[in-house]
Length: 312
Ligand SMILES: Cc1ncc(COP(=O)(O)O)c(C=O)c1O
Image 1 (cartoon, protein in one colour):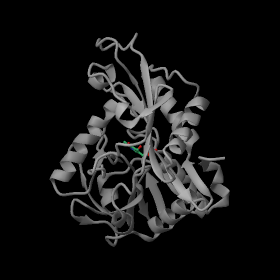
Image 2 (cartoon, protein in one colour):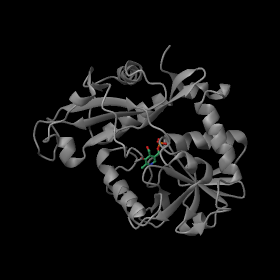
Image 3 (tube, protein in one colour):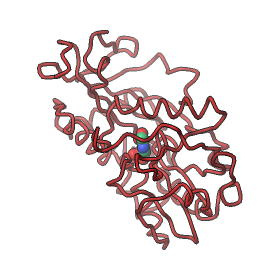
């Protein structure tokens, strides 16, 4: 992640229903979630606009978190509405406008049997200022990627649509490998050899002004940015086709880009040293990126329903 400088050390974190000082939001070393990756989380962005601060698609993020929890039989002990209120309150209490929000729910301290039954479900929400994930320059000029030798986790072994903490070991290996080999980011193939996604991003290819992306039922996390971009692209008038993409198709695409809460809409300019399109942000990517930033910055009246005001 970009946060090499580290996380802030001041502010309040919502922890099991109450706000505690940042440094006091601690976990026991024998917590179940720490040992077995048994937790679910979300990454959400809040944007500062000239109409106020808005959380992008809060409902969809909270829905996905509760769905992820259900897949791991983890019962979040708060109704969704209360959790959403706590998320907004976390932004407010920390005096933040533009920020990244990280809610998490995990099996806590009680026993260390793999079966989590009996362990409490601990929940926390933190928020802090966070700029672009892959760098400002990446949004404009694109990034250099590599096909990872690690395949994306498979739906036959894990519920890949869950945003679960343990799943991110797969992403971690892909990122480490890409960085070690001098690339900005990895692209993971699925176990059938089709293009799946990035370690924290969904992927799109553009050919003859049509967008292609792996289907939501494939080995991907169904991203909320992905869903938004599909709708925005169709709204602009582009055709979007959800189907398997081969390595070859991606390498010969006119354009390619990543989507994600952290990465937003990031052009891909090279894969394994092969230039994609003209080696810079493509025309279609540019149009979609602009539309996306207009929407999150509250400049598109038709999409205000995706923006949850932090202060009413
Ligand atoms: C593995 C993975 N794929 C895709 C995404 C993009 O999802 P979203 O657009 O909801 O942030 C993320 C980020 O959450 C992710 O971690």
